[in-house]
Length: 155
Image (cartoon, rainbow, N blue to C red):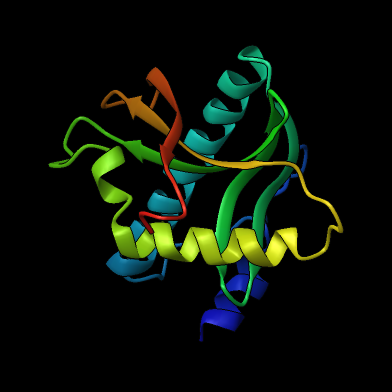
């Protein structure tokens, strides 16, 4: 089922449009999934803009492998930064950063190791978290970049 959903929705890529999905006959869960994906895409776009303003060079977005998924991979100050983006609306009960649990960190670290396996002599790595906050209308109100938010020894 997951494979089918991925095929239908496709990977989100910069400068490309996501296929339209009709929810007229969909379930509430389907509408919620689409709303969550739209919020996530909004957050990733805002995070990318903030990272670029802070001197990051984007290498990849939505990298996925059997070990996990990484929202943004970038180069910054001689490091390869594996960036997890968390977006929250005002109605959210927890902070974006608190959603990056030790289990999530471990998945990111495994996916990063898989990504780095393609390089003979990779740069030093770092794990960053970008917290994106929105208002009730879905507009981005604040973006916080936390470089070195966690490391491989913690995950």
